[in-house]
Amino acid sequence: MPRYFIQLAYNGTNYNGWQIQDNTPHTVQQILQEKLSMIIGHPIEVVGCGRTDTGVHAKDYYAHFDSDKTDLHIGTSNYIYKLNKVLPYEIAIKKIYAVKDDANARFDAEFRSYEYFLHTYKDPFLTAGSLLFYGDLNFDAMNEAADYLLTVTDFTSFSKVNTQTKTNNCHVTYARWTKLNDRQFVFRITANRFLQNMVRAIVGTLLEVGKGKIDLEEFKTIVNNKNRSGAGMSVSGHALYLIDIHYPKEIFNG
Image 1 (cartoon, rainbow, N blue to C red):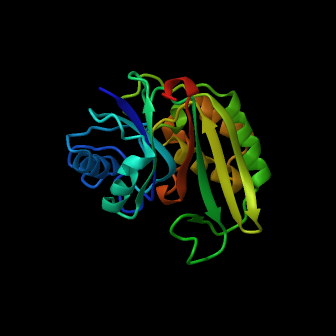
Image 2 (image 1 turned 135 degrees about the vertical axis):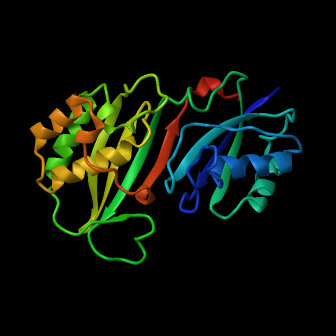
């Protein structure tokens, strides 16, 4: 049966994350499966590239699914148009790709990137998608600490406890705060994989560095102790965006 990747974006404000869970209705995966099944004409199960928490957004997200249809990726088939017509406004389909039969949206991803937005003044037009933080932050110190993440293998200190992952090892290749203007900032991080709650916990801990509550050596100790209780609180998910996922070209048909 042909396999497809579906590329989409979603605003996660009104959703309980990506993944279908017991007793947790209204997830992006649930809505997407329902509408795909309706438009394609047979039951569809989608496997996402990763789990996003409640309220977290995705500007670029991939999932794979199988279908007996052979033309879903052809532009003239209008499946993308039909899907976007029936999906809620918070979920938008960008493209459908034909891929190899064993291609996997989760395990074939070579790297993923997230952005976390922060602003330091009250603005009603930023509130929904950025964290409001009052006070001064030392971004130079925060970036020193972020640089240390590139040398780390085990990210247990920033992982939700009691998860089903076999390992907490990740390879971070980029982590940095950037100034957008005088009072708006963004943290971008890229890695081969992310643990549940990892980015939000890292941001929360870096904010402790920025406030001067912990220094670089204390940050290193927190990381190396591999204990979630030593790190900072997880920041709100509403300001977090999955922005980029990269796959090897070989898994795509054409």
